Length: 292
Length: 281
Image (cartoon, rainbow over all chains, first blue to last red; front, side, top):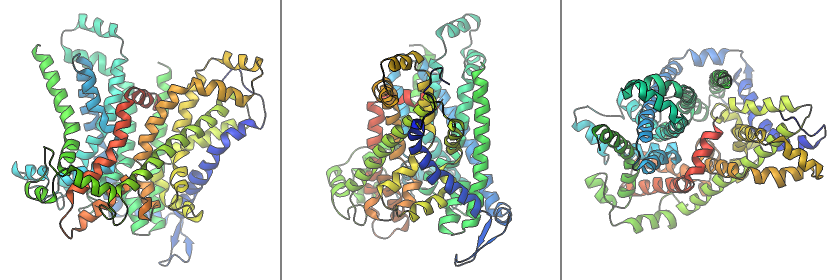
């Protein structure tokens, strides 16, 4: 808090009013609605509804489809997080080492940040299109019996590849700025003590990057949960047989296509709890960082 | 050059190709005739149909969607991107100013209300949000498109952080000179935040331009589509099959949807990186 502040007056309320009004109308009210509807069961015509306590929760969450989506979401977000973080870290370390062409590499590696997930999805989808996609031909030519329209593993591969591609640039930007924040003297001192650059990396550089890495993990998990919706919606649409359906995609599918408002709301509430947990973890971590 | 630096360059070149090649191929393929694409697959070199394809997509009614042209979608995307960025900066600066510079009774609860928006991504409250906007008669309007997106807390946190780093003496001095709270905000704080504002505007323009789920459910009329929504439509057309698939137009649309945000990021690269790294802290 500031030492010097303006004293009590109605003015601050005027300043916060626009944001608070929008939040109440478009955030809190819909969220409350989602929670409320998650306890209701509507009849087939949407004419009347009945309070059913936790039935929507037990119906959806213990259903095979939800568990399948939850399982896929966990595998998917783990793979996307680790692959895109790993690739970005490798590239950032290398980009931090070079002198010639450093800024060209940096630009080429970060620019994809600006591409929207569904755009990346459609591009990838077209490259894997059986009619024209050379990637599809390539996968079959090297001996995979590749068919992402029918095979769950192949479909997951396509979605994961595009999701990783889309996320590398953000991670790269953060890792590079983290690496550039490490003082030169630290690196020089490490050079004196240890000859192997691999060991220097794992014992000095990587621990110093730990805060960045942890922060990026939270960002990446959130990305894999929510933002990949656009990629899935323009590639597999959760097919084949729900094998690439994430939890968010399922909320959308059940709510808008299936018109199962209660079940979809119950799923939303479960997702809210998951986001809450992630946020708590993130804030604990940030508090720790302050004490460094 | 020694061996290890050659490996370094090799890895970086592979990385750069991995990130750039797909988009280049998309562009090169979009400049070929549909028959060529069907016969030979994806293209690595540009062909001779650049003007034909892009002219049809951008200016001819029915060239890419049923009726609407890519120019109209481009306009919608621009309005969304700019409106989102400007709205977000204005709203969050005002709120952050109140929270940092004023002592008032509801400061703490209001701060928590703003904070809570972080817990409520659009995706988890999508159906009730749609109902609220529909009841207000805001479907298919720019207001309904932009306003529900701009209230989230990220911008407010960012400016709160920045205002806290502004020396207290400035406010003391301004008060001695008789500045009102509004005057202090407009004449001192805003000019002081210029770089930060620019950085946030750039990030938010890209974020706004790339919005997908919200515009998807809230625009029903074709003339309100953004380019990103056009992508979904063309996906559906390709999926359904029918006559000769217009792959070159699909690729052209992905290029058009990509170009403006990419240009903004490339032109303002330094501000963009600064804004991204600072705002997420």
